[in-house]
Amino acid sequence: MTFYNIIFGILFLGAVGQFFHIVFESSNFNFMTLPSFWMVATLTLVVFNDVIYTTQVLEDPPTDKRKEYTLSMKLLDLLSFMLLCAALLVLAPSDNILSVKIKTDLLQESREFFFWLLLTVYWATAIIWNIAGKVYPDSSSGKIRWMLMVMLILSGFLSLANFFHFPGTILWILRVFILLYMCSYFLLYKYFVFRK
Image (cartoon, rainbow, N blue to C red; front, side, top):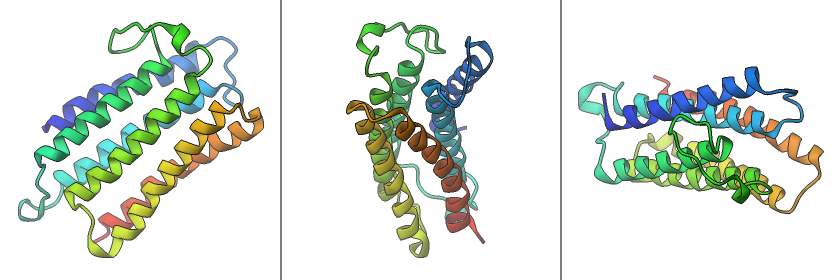
């Protein structure tokens, strides 16, 4: 088990726990209008994709074809872990797996802005991780980088949309689109990178 599996295993448990908390314990739950649902669903999918993808890159190939898990990749993973932990704390400032309580008045008005901003920085880190690790075969490298760049742009746009208080309908459409894109991203990178 790698360093990566341990730190992201903790994060995955936290994200899934928060997802179930929002779905089953929130009063007046309505996934159409509740921004927390879309944020925690996206975070859970991001962590799940990251764990599956990195395990596939670092552990599944035959020993002679495995990518070296370099110090720079480990440090980028640690930064990614901290960014996603911060996103989890934005979602659950007082009741979270890390047992950390943060002042909610800092997040009251700008919670969704901070969440998407953290995810935007995370996607930038993911792009750097993939470049530093040289993990793509030449034929798929452009396609995968393009898909990561789209996630970076979408998260950044949604962060700005929250900062500038776009109408609720536009925000809802963006949230749904990002979640659907995340699902397609998982399927497409699997096709491009891991096809035999």
